[in-house]
Image (cartoon, rainbow, N blue to C red):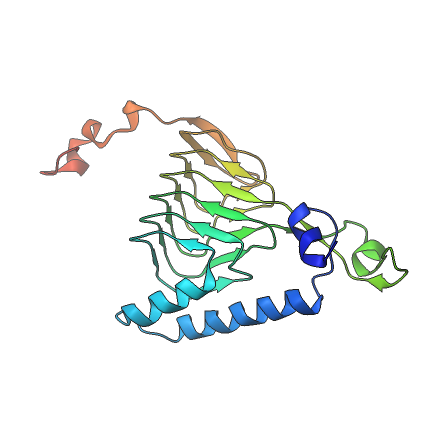
Length: 211
């Protein structure tokens, strides 16, 4: 197996592999290009995004600055908005459903390193070389989710449709659909329902209407 095949299979791989490093360098440079562009340079930003991600849905917007690791392992749906300092370390696959919103400083990570210091430094490969190795687990986010400022989504997590993740939360386990979840580690507080509708808060809704 190639190092990229090992990465995709979720087993130990060497992140210093030349082919993997080349892909990361390309994307890191695209990050710089994007972050040095202006918000109103729409065509320039769209061209960078097209080159960076596996797929990027119509109507989606990344405020920037952004910090994307590989990019080619990430699929972003339609009408997604990510505010300042959006970070995706996509050693494994990352999928984000339609109509998700990310407040500033949200981070999605997939790589995992050995817990023991000596194993984290070096492991012996099948060909007898001592190398720094890690592995990665995919992250999947459903449709219609909202992430508060400073949320971290950890490797291997699946978040269902229509969830709200409170600011500062660290998501270490799966979150079922339609959940309000907060905390470190992030835990489900309750299921979202019609009780949460703004129609129950006319002082906030003012002269607006529920669609």
